[in-house]
Amino acid sequence: MKITAPVEKNEMYDVKIIDLTYQGMGVAKINDFSIFIEDTLPGEEATIKVIKINKNFGFGKLVKLITKSKDRVESVDKDYTRTGIAPLQHLKYDAQLKFKQSQIQELFNKAKMNVEVLPTIGMDKPSHYRNKAQIPVKKINGKLETGFYRKHSHDLVPIEDFYIQDPEIDKAIVVVRDILRKYHVAPYDEINHSGVIRNIMVRRGHYSHEMMIGLITRTKKLPMVDMITSEIAKALPEVKSIMQNINLTDGNALMGKKTICLYGSSHIEDQLLGLKFYISLTSFYQVNPTQTEKLYSLAVEKAQLDGKQNVIDAYCGIGTISLAMAKKAKKVYGVEIVKDAIEDAKINAQKNHINNAKFVTGKAEEQMEKWQSQGLKSDVIVVDPPRKGLASSFIESAVKVAPKRIVYVSCNPSTLVRDARRLSEYGYEINQPIQPVDQFPQTVHIESVTVFEKK
Image (cartoon, rainbow, N blue to C red; front, side, top):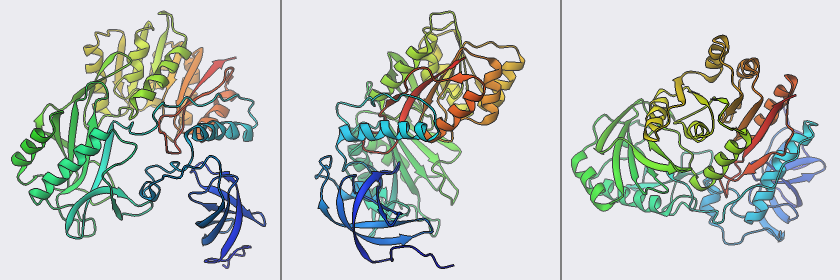
């Protein structure tokens, strides 16, 4: 089937950029045919080359800017765009915050839901904020390299300064890379499914400065393991833990099922909202601690707790929101599908001398049904679901519990809008403005807190 479009592949066009997509690409129209172009901003005029044509839209490549936006940042590193590390780095930070606010607002407007979205809460220093790195390792020109994959590919771009990561983590990656080179550890080769080291993972406590190094290997044994671990520990005094995760598969899964401790402890510790948290290699812990404190404080405040309420935390992870809520609730019930996370949550409750939090392993939607059939009454339900949002079975069992309010921490505006529609069918309405929080500056990701109240 031939695609009839008003443009031709490999041809040049002068266009005006009229919008920005949720992926941060500029949008131009030629005879009502949309073309998406990376590294362009609304209001700019540009010469572009059409590189791909689909039935209803195409993709272009920026050749040159004719006029520039006042919101453009000039000093950008192309590697951060190529790899998708910082797709919004060319947009001034205050404009990034407005972009995130308008993304949520437009989706609610499209859904014909009358909701106000407040200005996004940003960061004073919107770079070097990530407390965790997962860095692929590859052989390039006969040498073990660390960096990041070019978008939609497995071509590694060698990078030493990752811009959005804690600089101490960036330094640690280079140290580990050089030690692995010294001991001739073979990088993973995905075509032949050979080699040893697949990824290097680093976690660093924002307040504690405790560091964990994770070596993800294709093999059960890591050659010269004692020499490697003692050199890493010597070179990086903050390291409290070196873990090996064994991933024998030949797919794209980052981690395997088995993790062993090679040095020190199997956990590091950090604080959040004055509480201590025990963090393992595989546990989910928010990657931007400064903004997480703002996000979770907001969730606690919106729950309106005065010590009399039962709270259900439906995607509780290692208990970060649950334990923050427990200080102000009568009792908190947390559920999470990852068994290790629940073990960590129980340890975290003990460490913080919190006795009114109960944690169980299970699927949120199934556990809600159980609690509901056991007659558990909950005044507040807190949800911080993955990008796919809430399962419809979860919403059905949640509304049967009939909480006064549902506090929804979202990381995906489109599933938030879909779930808001479903909840409104059961009489749960948004009566106060939505508050976006910028957890991931320089990227297109948007977090927000929304409160649903029973009519």
